[in-house]
Length: 230
Image 1: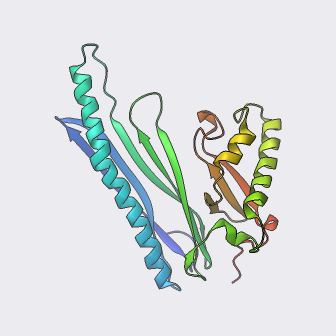
Image 2: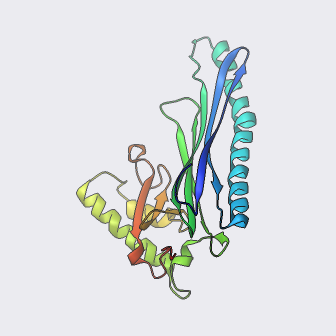
Image 3: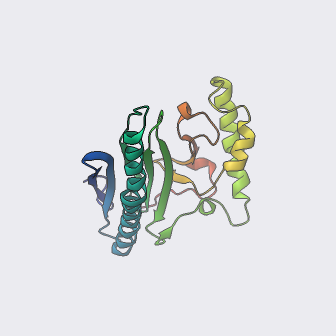
């Protein structure tokens, strides 16, 4: 059990291996949080149902679509005259809780799939909830209603990217400013202790080696920061 008295969670796991013709072809591993919110029973139910729905969807897709693909790949490898080796597939869903207090719950989940080749692929998604307002939080909530919040966030991200590129040339693609503007999604974020972290998927603005790129905007740069007032 982790975090504060107002917001506790336990990490749970779900593992399963799938075989075809006596050969293991797919391993599914899922680690997800189950929350206990003593002061907010309604949000506890909403959040846990949301997470379990995501887990079920990931497991179902792996157990059906990905398993069929893995079994087919094994069959093709066995029938290949070139004796191409078969590499078992992997599907991993890993949650990371980044904020858990009496006001907010925030987390992201990385869905990783390996289907052969040099490396697998990871897609990140995230959710943030306000326990006081009993609803999901959006990026526009960090600003006053008439503020062009998308421009404000994008300007800060571009500033940080320019600084990062100056210090570490090659960390992003050469046309990174254009790519950041194209792929920026203001609702791809999660909370940390003192900032809001916005992220870009693999290959969107940088080479694979750079990973999932994040930009953290401190609370003091936001008009309506998600600071927890006890």
